[in-house]
Length: 115
Image (cartoon, rainbow, N blue to C red):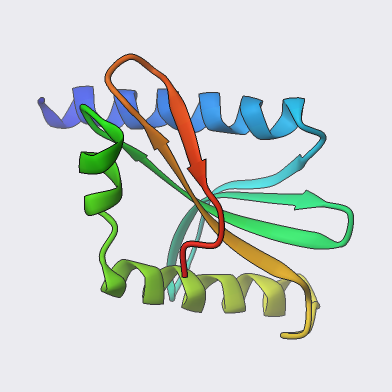
C-alpha cells in the first residue's frame, strides 16, 4: 500500500469503529487526540468511564493485533494520562484501553482491556 492508501484505509477503519461505539451508546469525545506523549486514535465515554481505543487495520485480525507493541501500549497509556490531566480529571478516573481490529473485509473485532 502507498502512504496515502494506508492513511485512507486507516481513517476509514477509525470511522467504522467510531460508528460501532456510537451505535452502542458511547460518545466519541476525541479522534486522533495528540499531545506530547503521543496519539490516541479514538477516545470514547460511556457513563463516567473513558475508553482509549487503538485502531489497527490489516489483512486479518491476527496481523492487526500483532502490530500493537508494548512500546505503543506504553505510549497510549502515557497519552491517556495526559488526556485526563488536560481534561481536569484525576488518575482515579475509570478507564479502559481497547484494541479495535479491522480486517480486509471491513469486519471489526474489539479486544477490551489490552493493557
